[in-house]
Amino acid sequence: MAIANIEYIANPQDITLELLSEILSNKVASHDLKPLGKGAMSNVQILTIEYDKSINKNEELPIQFIVKFKKPEIPLPDLFSVEAEFYRLTESISNEPSSFPFQLVKAYAAGSSWLMLHFISHSGITTYDVHEGCPTSLFDELLVAMAKMHSYFWIYDEDQSANGSGTILKYHSQKLSATPGAGHSLPISERQKLFLPAWPAFRDRLSLYIKDSDSLQMMEGIVEWTAADDHIEKSAFLVSLRKWTIVHGDFHIGNLLVNKTTPWLVDWSMAGVGNPLVDLVFFLVVGAPNISTDGSDTATSASVERVLKLYHTALNNQNPMLSWDQLVLNFRLCLLNQLIILVCYDELCRDMADSFQDERVVYHAHFDRVNVRCVKMLLSDFGWVDDMFR
Image 1: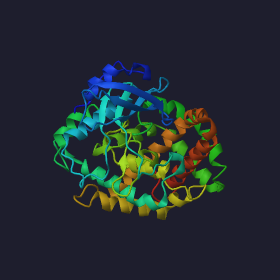
Image 2 (image 1 turned 60 degrees about the vertical axis):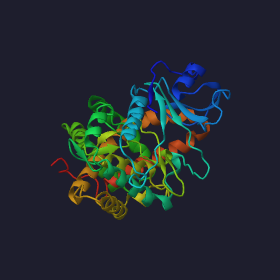
Image 3 (image 1 turned 180 degrees about the horizontal axis):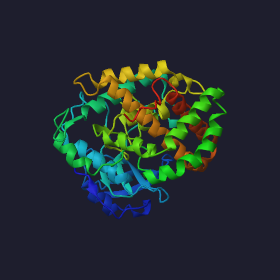
Image 4 (image 1 turned 90 degrees about the vertical axis):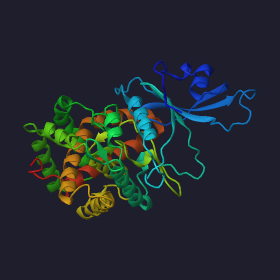
């Protein structure tokens, strides 16, 4: 069943029996929408329906769905259009279960302001909130799965990918995000305007966790270097230049539904063809295990090196994709770019967290851990170097 493109839906009141009957190609007798209570950028609802039994007597048809509506205050006009296009893309590819490392949800209908997906039963599935961090026992397994996903979609040239679907990828990628990754759509001019003014408050929070004066002084130097000349523009350009594979763009434990076989990877609203190290850096910075308050579990040079080697081996398992030097250089670039985005968006993220009421303190603590991890990685042997734009 093709994904229906329906643009006039904007809120739950727009969902009618006639609309559902058209989408599902079966007469729907009743429906019920209930808030799920998740989603920072969308109003997520569970849709339960009953079919007209006089017509649909024997068929086993889906009765529960997830429906997401874009929050008006979120400035991402293509949020659900991108996600729907990704599902159209994966429908077009011969996707053998053994060759793709994640399960993908089925989409039924979409528009720029809404998306209707199959409901995944939580029986036998474990979910986590992003602020919990990825459990240590799952981290390596999910990291390797990410690398295999990047390998699966790898584009060797403009017409050929690792799985023989390069032409399809080329067509669909034009409708995916042009700048995949959370926060990566922030224009260069806005980054340049926001970065330095936002840094002092960001630094003050860092100093609550990083007590070493030498480290803080070094970060001041990195920030000055980053803000100088056209370095913010260069970092964004060099990251976006490497359009090697499909990037999920929001890869963290909150978007993974874990079971005993193949995990589900959901929320592809920021996906696009781009630099795979965007996903790796984001997973490390945002989704790493929360073992210690100051982030030292994932931020040391030895820890970063271990993760990079594990990813590099899994990525190159079937075919050579990236050399070690290419991997490290792009990790450095994506890490610096991630810092810029974190600094620019820190206050906005905290304002959004305030709307979570009871979880406000939890999310503020999570943002602190994320920021500390990013900075400590930048100060590691695999972080910032002054010739990274070579």
